[in-house]
Length: 347
Image 1 (cartoon, helix red, strand yellow):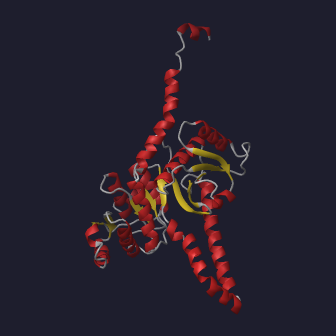
Image 2 (cartoon, helix red, strand yellow):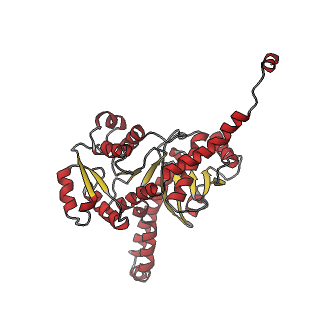
């Protein structure tokens, strides 16, 4: 029931996703009379849908704390609860971001070895697509958080983007080893010396994001959110400039006619609807946040992200990677010789 155009766009998005993923089943949580009317219009979707009724929903401007206290019968809470109870493989919502994160953390908990979940998303680059995390869930991060984000991002790149050997970079103010704050340097040292089969590139700068220098960009939520919003704003600015340029004169309009096919191809390539669906990675369950203003195509793509994460065994792969990360440390503790009483007395 969340989002500017819900529940209509949710049902239409599910219908689009049905065509892409023929084996998908959908559990729609919300106002049953409204949902039944919408589903009836989608003849091929009817047999794929189960509806769970509730009239309560989380308001777009609700504080996360208020949503936790009073939203236990809301559509958002019940949808996340269905994932926790194994009745669904993932939850997709276009509702209140803070409430979705708070409820997901409370109901699903974090995976073993994960201190904090991160928000991740992917977007186009000159070399294809890359994933960035964190995008706003954690404003302040220590070195361990950044290492965990790197592992989760690497697994995501393999599971969802289909990359065989994704490269990882830490977003910094320069690529030199001496630059950056202590947390970044410590995270880089850990990633260089870990026994994980990952390809750590090192530090990258802001211009490396669009260049596609690495496949996984790791940063704290404060920096990541600013970088993401800056990229989105720049894309809108360029689009507006192009529109104005092609309307500026008769010859420019004629030029548009000649370049129309190329411009449509460009538009499809950078269409933000293709990249809709920010993941809360690190939770013991799959939760995907769609843009609040999403249309049916956008929401279908967010459903596709959840589908790929579930189908690719995303969470199990994260568990396996963190077992590898912690195993050498545990082995070192076991192998460390015990000090004898005489040694202790001498000290």
